[in-house]
Length: 226
Image 1 (cartoon, helix red, strand yellow):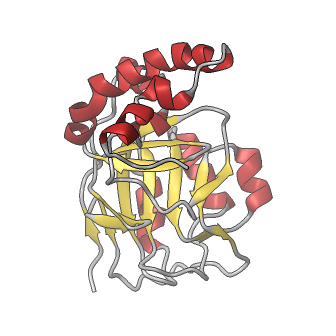
Image 2 (image 1 turned 30 degrees about the vertical axis):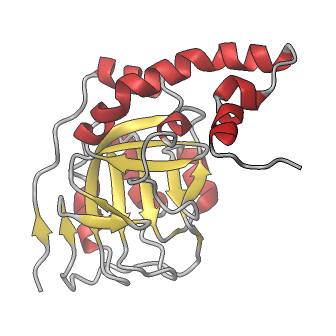
């Protein structure tokens, strides 16, 4: 079986990264339903900052890390490696060696739909890591084939294409096309800008239902309140 190897996507301009990172990512959850990675994939190593970058997709087989080793040397500064393990939850494809390569290459982070190993070393290296947990059992360099780099994958139930935007923070991970983000961008910015005023109004004694319009909606729906 062959390993499909495609090129990595373009990097993002610094101003684009900064602009997206300034948004509160959960605000996007008010307007989108797709692209949100399974919350069991959680932050295990944090840089203390949000992650924004284009996805470098990698598909591995359960026990073989050949494709991942090659992909780690292809990633460009600011990109995010997203790894589809094919549903394996036992073998860790990411450990100290791969993370060191990603650090040297300037990766913005790595998302693993599976487990990782060497957690103390990963924490020391500092590349942000999102995964389902940790394991002592690791993948091997088997050259078995069947993996892919830059190919469509599934991570945490989300279909991810090479070059998709990956947004991640302490709350979780979102992977989506630029078009999907652009469709809700202006609305999300307005929402973010208005939230401080809403919080001040609540602290001052306002009722959330009145301020958000929920109370009016309940009245319109003729819902009885006992």
